[in-house]
Image 1 (cartoon, rainbow, N blue to C red):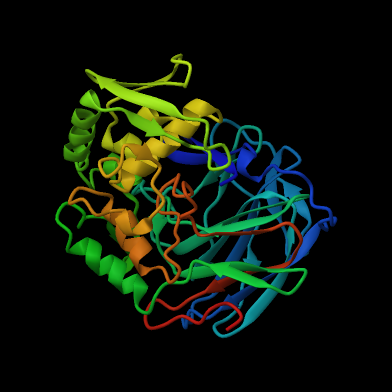
Image 2 (image 1 turned 135 degrees about the vertical axis):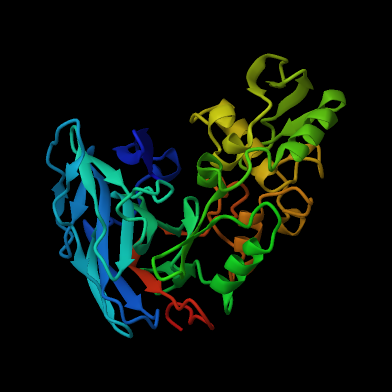
Length: 400
């Protein structure tokens, strides 16, 4: 959402990069330096819980303690070394814990049973868990995270499944006026239903990662699973070929800005390249025939800088993942009922969205195209919430 990652060797490193999506006009009401974050443990599990508040503040990467005080990571060498212990003892089953959430852009991690193994490298860059790597020390730990940005313009907080689908949780906020907003809750037995549906879907049945006891810890996202060989790199190739054929003789019109409907770009295919022009006929962007890894990761062939090229790339990425590019020559389409209907689609995203109580999820990087992401925002937040939910049965809504 608001931090970027780069790969050093086989590890993911968090680097500061504030997202344009959360840089807005300051709220008319001053947002305090911290707001309360209440973490509720409704998981039904007896495991000890550990919480981490990690991110970027004022251009520095670091962590916050339970009081909301920010601590920059110390500098390190070129070889990753253990980070200071940033863990906060979380709530026991059936209990709540309230800590202070500071102004930063980052993540709130939570783990069951064991502390996470974080490392730092170079000038205080954080080495994050990368469970697609079988040698990652966090591979056998059950954990998850929510993403948030709190700044002078308010709070943005969301659940995410971009990297994997794991321990269920909800996230939310309460406005200064008392309105409660939340997202991320699964339907009854939603965890089991996603795991089961993927295990029965041909070509998508190798994504689960199990712990030493044989229980499923998580389902890896296809963006990572292509790299590990757990899903075929060509799993979307048939759909890509049909899109390429369609727009070899037709024009794809992309209208990427909902607030600027007059801004349009026109794409046509010649050979292995799709070229987009603007209303004046000037070439704006070109894209090669995208690989499955580029589609799942919304990167590589579909890299999306923060400009018009990126806006087109985001639209294409969403259209390929949702298999909506053949349904309409004007994109993006905004009716979720039409998403994931082709036999060749992102079944990981499809099944997760189907099992979310509000239909919203961050199942791939640009799932926020036409607001399908599991995000809540307010310019004057009073408090925030994370609720750890049960793996089986029905969850209770935050505040319910």
